[in-house]
Length: 89
Image 1: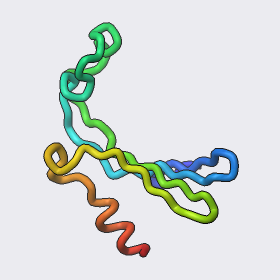
Image 2 (image 1 turned 180 degrees about the horizontal axis):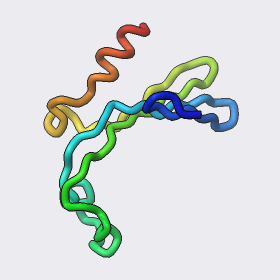
Image 3 (image 1 turned 90 degrees about the horizontal axis):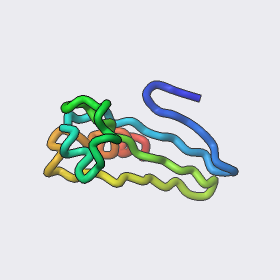
């Protein structure tokens, strides 16, 4: 089931939501550093990479997974956790 830019799915008893926080511009060289060229030749030199989080609802706990890039690479990213989750408690 897809709602807005979030994707809901289930694995066993766990309910999961892939949450989108937009995208940010990157170069192919940055995003795919050390990747063989033949694997990425079809990808444009510049593109927007998605910012996604995974929310897992076990029924007893809610676990948010965010590997993140940090402030150094994303001066305008990361708003979903600071704004949306604070509103929800």
